[in-house]
Image (cartoon, rainbow over the protein chains, first blue to last red):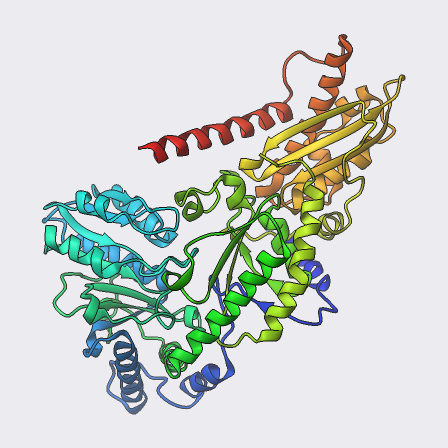
Length: 410
Length: 167
């Protein structure tokens, strides 16, 4: 391990002298704005550091702020009941809870689960795990822009179905699913089905109201709205038959045991406030910069493809582009050395040679998936940031294409 | 999205930034390809071989990650001036991996593919010539088999996806 750390230090040294840095890998982690950190700090050092279930002042302070934070997040999600918010350590845990909690609690009603084939890994892999407990999963295909095939959904749901899970917004290609229509179709065929949506990429980016949608469960994540990592929540409609999946000390959260992480909950609520105050302006800002980025890339480079839909059916922050004749991992390193931080759907780091399942599901060739780059804009990016990316990116792509030459043209 | 941590060492990074012997070669005696763009991992070697069967020069193109580029680049440096026999016998994926200062485990196959491409080039040279020296085994070496396996896997995945799409 020491050797690996040395390598990383050398890699970091290679970044010295960078004049401008633009972080666009907000899919995988994010910076936390100072105002969010400032809101969190007193809850480590000054107040509410007690256990919210215990009978003393620091505990009651914690109870108070956790309930206030729940109330805020419930309101932003369109719920009036703060108890419907269950804080979890993140999106992964919330999705595990939603799927396993629903499956185990309702196993006597049936064993069938229905999801889309472009669900995030933390849904896909949980359904794989549930197979070992006798549950079966049907994956509903999507079209070339990532929209769910509603006919196939209708066919798949029957009296044995206990759970349907469809993301509101796809995390990789930004497709905004017709969740309301999907839910109506599902409930029409079987009103007992629990409908879960991972709304992590919708929350703070598109209008979202769990009461209007009538979903039973919805996942949200803090870092995806520039809150701290390590905290997320599962909205669970009052009365929905879902039980917790972990055992431990009972706290204030019905579906997640253990001691609450009060500062992270405060940070999540603060980040939510910042995302939802001036919601329209924030979203327009992300969209304008995202469009500038995508349009600029298409002007500067040939043999590029946008992955996912265009227009108002695409999340405002999402840009996912395939650069043909260019390998994605090599491109992420080249861009990093210039101060532009992105991620790729390339499979180059895996011996199994499987690129992004989402890009494959929308019919992209493997070579197109290997050359894909995912970028997400935030309200903190500036015009100058995007101008800088557009200065650096064409040269980076052209250098990698120069190494590729005629090799890898299929 | 790929998230395996890849702490490349400085040598790999340097070869990635400044690859040696890059690009096609017009007067190449032999050209060989290994890998498949569907795997995101493909190499072309160009070798100029003289009458004494010495590799006078070598160049490459690489569709792949930083490790793929670095291992291809280092192979072209190692084999320059070598006899075909020495290149066949002495250049193994382990040596190539050592020569780039080591690779993360998930990247070992890059070195294997580079050597697979080299061995293919040497085999092809003798096929074109219509003769085979005694030291050249009939059976494929480990690196050649791995390259083949990777290509088969790519075909299989592509076929499976096509079948799924038709369903």
